[in-house]
Amino acid sequence: MKSKSILKRINYDGVLEKAIKEIQPLIDNLVGKKMNSRWVSLRIMDGDSKLLESMKDYISFDLSKNELLRKKLETLFTNLKKENIELEKLRDCIVASIVKTAENISEEVVIFENKNHNLLDHKIDRILTSRIFGIPIMIGLLGLVFWITIEGANLPSDILANGLFWIEGKLSNLFKLMKAPNWFHDILVLGIYRTLAWVVSVMLPPMAIFFPLFTLLEDLGYLPRVAFNLDYYFKKAGAHGKQALTMCMGFGCNAAGVISCRIIDSSRERLIAIITNNFVPCNGRFPILIALATIFIGSSTGALSSLTATLSVLIAILLGVIITLFVSKLLSKTILKGLPSSFTLELPPYRKPQVGKIIVRSIFDRTLFVLSRAVIVAAPAGLIIWVMANIIIGNASLLTHCAQFLNPFAQLLGMDGYILMAFILGLPANEIVIPILIMSYMSKGSMLDLDSLTEMKQLLVSNGWNWLTAICTMLFALNHWPCGTTLLTIRKETQSWKWAWVSFLVPTITGIVICFLVAQGARLFGLI
Image 1: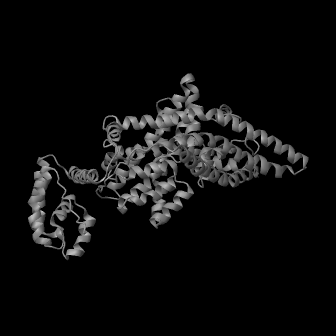
Image 2: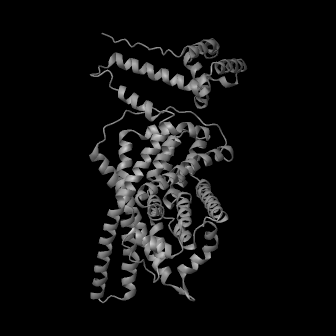
Image 3: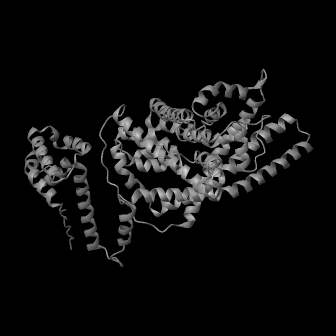
């Protein structure tokens, strides 16, 4: 017995069906039996330029150049506008009708134990993706993640630092028993080991809390809802809606965010997403933001310290998103001109979190991966800093000479030469900026014994830091050149050093301008 397939006709909205009937006879005359005229009519109204280009080869002529069809479309779109149907709404109507028809077919052929199995998802989405509550809930969840991270990381960080520096003392005793030369002890223990100790104690606790929480939201299926909420704003910025997804990937790692830009078909919009991906902080920059917010902003507000620190980090993140949109708009109006293309985002069902997988992915695939990367880079960096701090030229070390050279420019940005030098030397990986900075403030070519964030604040304050220095450093951490890995990834993805340099210069110039305005504004109004 032969099975008979039945073609299901998709019925669209009444206004859209009327528009199809107006244009279909003309399309029928142009394409004949080569293609389905109803389907071609929809594609022409949708304005899918790539599809029309491929159709040209198949039907042997260009539909877009037919004068009669062009005039018919102009009249058609004028009538649709009178019905308050713009191109974007037209596309949404087409997709919604297709999805609805697919759901009806599914209900006819699939037996569900619970016919209302997705009712709860729809109810939740009405709240999480609504224009009124969507963005505030998104900000609130992000703030909650940061608050838990900041509140929970302080004690483990102190315990870890105490343990690692206790080991340092034992290592020093071991070197004395071995009667090793002082320079050998200083390089290995005070240079390399102490750098690694600070990288681990400062970075591990926040990451061990932040990544499982972020992975939990990802596993629940919430991140596509974030992209849905931000799609409108990226379209307004002249960028692709999928850039919201690539931006979310950038929170984990900017190099991964750059690679994820492959999901954007348009080369123009893909370049915009690549260039602006660095404006959201990656794993390596979160410790800088969290540490400075905790010890400078949070510590001055007593019982509300963790909430204030959380708020400051959250504001920094939101500022990064706003800058992403602003720079995307600027690029789309200048060197990367063009109109944003449309895309259909299908929201996946909410899933029950798999705790085991979340722990494995967040701890092993993210936390330990980032930490190992930081350790690998921090070890030679610690050696370089120790050497620079112990090479004396005149009456000062090479490290001091470099910092003094950068100091005049850094002062204009609300920082000092040591901070700017830490960012420059931290090019291989953002994770080592804070350890380099701590080593740079040493008195004898090695890091001081800092057993807590409070002592770290004392070290920074003794070297001229104040609230403005902390804010400008946070702003520059948010807006400066990508790390070396990300730059090489951009070169590989774009096949051009030109766009790698553009990706280097755009965030750097942005950071310089913002820090300069904030620093000079604070000084002008007597705030510092």
